[in-house]
Amino acid sequence: MLAAVLLAACAPAAPAAQQRSAASGTAASGEQRSAPKRLVAATAGEPSIPPAISIPGDDELRVLVNAGLTVVDNTGSRRPQLAEAVPSIDNGLWKLFPDGRMETRWKIRDGATWHDGIPVTSADFIFTAQVAQDRELAAFGHDVHSSIDSVEAPDPRTVVVSWKRPYVDADGLFSHDLTPPLPSHLLEKPYLEDKSTFTQLPFWTDEYVGSGPYQMREWVRGSYLVLGANDRYVLGRPKIDEIEIRFMTDANTLMASILSGAIQTTLGRSLSIEQAAQLREQWRDGSTNIEFGITAWLVLIPQFVNPNPPAVANTAFRLALLHAIDRQEMADTLNGGLVPVAHSWLSPGQPQYRAIEESLPKYEFDPRAATQAISTLGFTRGPDGMFVDSADGQRLELEIRNIGLEISRKSMFAVADYWQKAGVGVSTVVIPPQRVSDFEYRATFPAFQLFNQPNDVRGMPNLYSSRARLPSNNFQVPGAGNHTRYMSPELDGLLDQYYSTIPRPQRTEALGRIVRHIAENLNLMGLFYNGDAEAISNRVTGVTTARAGGSLSSWNAHEWDMK
Image (cartoon, rainbow, N blue to C red; front, side, top):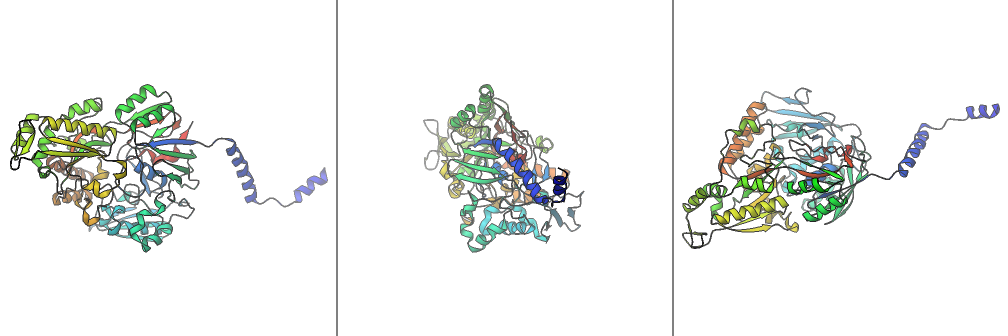
């Protein structure tokens, strides 16, 4: 026995790498014995990764599969993600110069990689800026880039942006809300070879490579997609191994799937408040979390380019139509009286709302004022009580479109009923799923669209004239776009003033002028505020539901878990 012990002591030790491999093999065996954690989620439509006209679930999917330098958490605060820190005046990473220029600097975290294992480097952000500034690919851009002088890379892990002028959200550059990063090692070559096919690359679906907590495994068009946990995610491997996202355009099917336990959570604005209330009563295996009046509003969007009828472009006519709608009754009926009428583009959940609320005009329900105003605009009422054009006798007819979400569809029919009672003919159109991303069709609606749309300061760039979808830009613009195609130098100037005002009190004053411009010109016609309704199974933990400032539930998806 003594000889055997001495012989073993003299034998060479196993390499440390082999010891780690053995240990990990033991852990792996343990993991194999336990079933993988799998979450089944649903959206109200098929989401899209490349920039497009947003539908519910788009943003959530993009944050699941791709990371930015920073991310907005559920409180509306910005946190570092791929970067080590968020630039600020206090930490010296955000510098203001006397001549109005600025500089922001980010250090990429050590170990940040794309899904294919290639390191995320500063070269990726230089390429992203190149694509974002390319007018031929306007959908990838953002107005923020007009304020940028240069993007430089002192070393592979440092990104330095020089700014021509102040920009209040500069710390959010190269993140989900301001141009998320693109992998240059995969996209630079096809970009340089043929820009015309850039958005049709297989990369944007089942071959997508991002840097987020989950990576693409499978995408069956029109049905579902499957995401797998990213072992290399820079903030740590997600606790849930696999997420399947099913596309459900039918509200009844979605509800039945949740109640049966087939769906554990919803992503995006997929449920109405009415559905959420029903789930609270019937869904024993889950809990429903709802926010009221913070993240969205129901809004009528007028057409300002060749509207039909032309009266839609007349502010007095739009005011008459707004007077004809009992918005309080709509809020009480469709959302159980839990949300207020939307007198302001800015929602009450935003911190600046109280400072500007009192100065806003409020247009009450007044059907008599509505019909009197329409009568002064060249229309007369016929024997059937409907208005006709006094010049040619043509009946006054409007069309309203929406993308078919339950709350917006019900609102559309309610508005149509109010307008018909006021003597205005109305036809309603639910946009079919196959035309949701048809940019020209979506841009050239004749009179009105009705959306359930986010309305916080992060969406303000979509108010710029340059975001209008026009033939000259092939109906493709950065972000969600200026749906109304309202092009106002005055509003553009107010937006510029806001984005160049860093001190918060003066910035709030500039925001108030923007909100008043919208309220007075009615280029957006608010009905009532709305909130997110999300179904979350009691088996799912870590999902933050009380959100503000444009944050998404998937901002911390790597921390989600399943019981």
